[in-house]
Image (tube, rainbow, N blue to C red; front, side, top):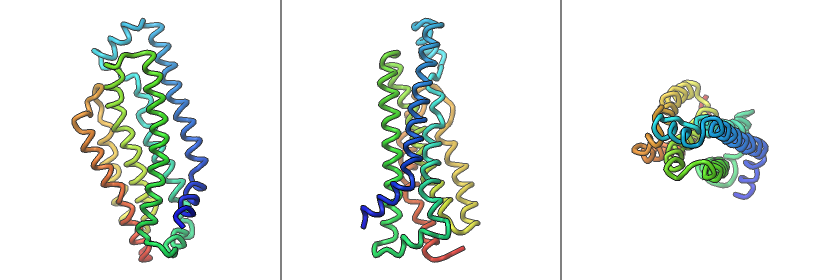
Length: 222
């Protein structure tokens, strides 16, 4: 039964996930082509100086890539369930409805996690050819909230899409508009380090939010 649920989720998101992963890899590649260009014309030592002392964020082009992935997977995974209220068919399976929703959410999370790990490993591996650890480590700390934003965006959009009551949907949109900017405050490299743990906890709490919309969907509220 659970294998069938997971397979159904894979059929919904597979092409979106593959295309997104390829686009993300291309963005990382473009980022380091630009780094190559800048180090060539500014000399390596001067470029490092700009990063270390002038707060140049060479990785800025990655800022919204994780969030875009979270939104894309949420739409691919949950919008089809709202067409003719198809998710009600899933709720009629002889298993706990909340477990089904959490399984769907866990699957989407796993897809995003796999993509983000690929991006992070690729970023770190290529960056090692251009920068010392003193530059790479703060950059990874700065990337962390952007990846967390991708998960948060996925959870919040899933909540909004699956919500059958418009007044609640409007409130969720306002909530998302308040929460998501918290992950994108401007600052120098590693500036988010003191709050990354708090953002991670917030993101984990958002991961169960879908149960609220699922409850009203099961009750047939409109």
